[in-house]
Image 1 (cartoon, rainbow, N blue to C red):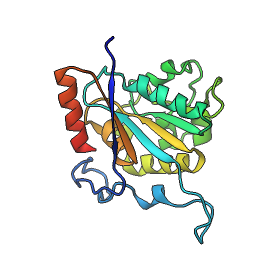
Image 2 (cartoon, rainbow, N blue to C red):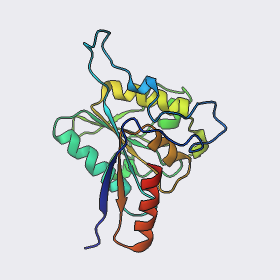
Image 3 (cartoon, rainbow, N blue to C red):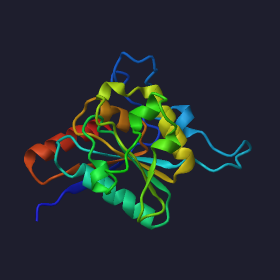
Length: 209
């Protein structure tokens, strides 16, 4: 069997390269977790609960099984009773909805939320089999330049208030969608196949994470 291999990398409180994301944004890329995403919910005095954990599923090479891994990982978390949302970051080429059997239920998507054309709750789709699982679909008609650091931060901050885990299904490579997904992640799951080009690209992604 030709199976994907998975590597897990934790990057808590890691400093990232200030040139990592597009210089066209006004966001100061200094810390991997801006304060709005790391806030404690529920009031002062340390009595609140911490936000949900953000996990990015990524790879360097395409076609290695990222979306399958993200869908399976999120479903597994939900089946264990964790409130889980899986987000498709592959703007323009969404496939996560097909893996979860939700392709006929997508009305609003990630970019609609970023553009404030709908609320986050309107765009979230609940799985009919796993009551703790929800999905935020990628846009099929926009491009990845629709993503902004401020917009992604706002969406993930709101999701982390509601869900125990937010799983980000990153597109392949090191373009905008992948960089925005990795920037806010607590952990990265790097998916690869047992062949040279896939392993070399995965090693490159470890460096970015």
